[in-house]
Image (cartoon, rainbow, N blue to C red; front, side, top):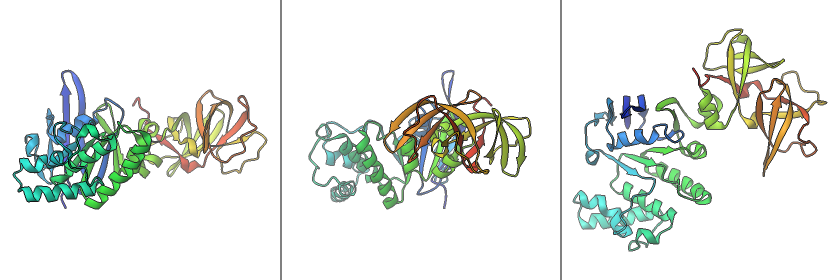
Length: 363
């Protein structure tokens, strides 16, 4: 089966500013792929290139094997759900959903059946005659989805469609959107800056920064084996520590941090003794013990001082300043920390497989 979308070395400039630089990406048919990154990284520009709302300076865009780089937006077999839903305020729900079908000249009987089917699909039966201003944000989003799906596009583009919803409704709509994509078997490409949204919805995620794609992988791959410091911090809020390689062995390195030796994984980068490296480790992977506790020999252990405590329900976040001055955060669950006070000196450790060497952002 041909890929649903293929992008070949796309570049886009706005004046002197490079919005996208040498972007290549393949999206499989039926895949839910997310473009994830901070504001201004180029993800919405990339989506607009696919939709035909912007045109690349260089590079090619293929849909199902066909070169559509120079096709106008209205001829492309894609539909877009925008951040503000872009519903027609003067049309009721039924006419909004029917709009694309009417432009294609479909018979009225087909349009009525399709509108009914779409309203049922998104759980909004019986609101044909209501207008957008009479609907909640969640209902407007569903109408926008129904309108986009009515013409059965092979590729659906979603530009941060849940950003205006409250947190509870957003969680609910995530579940519904993923269930809908699975039910239809369509290709979805989502733009978001929300890491949780990307992790919970996506088959794969393309992490973007400064107009480039830094890493593409499954949520699990990006969370456990980030390739760069930016990916590590953006996907999992990883702690980033600097150390010096003492020795390397297969996919493991022994690294000096302060006065201590720690073992970390290395799946991406060549390393050699004496090299300075960046280590990423998730807050939830870090464990903390008092100085009096005797730790097992296989555990990595550093020493530091608790400098800040933040209670977050099921977890408590401790900020710890290590003996060499570096600062890390540990997310602790069900640990006897109630007697600890800010200023307490502690031991910090993690399983070696839970820390990985990543490419620093300045290289």
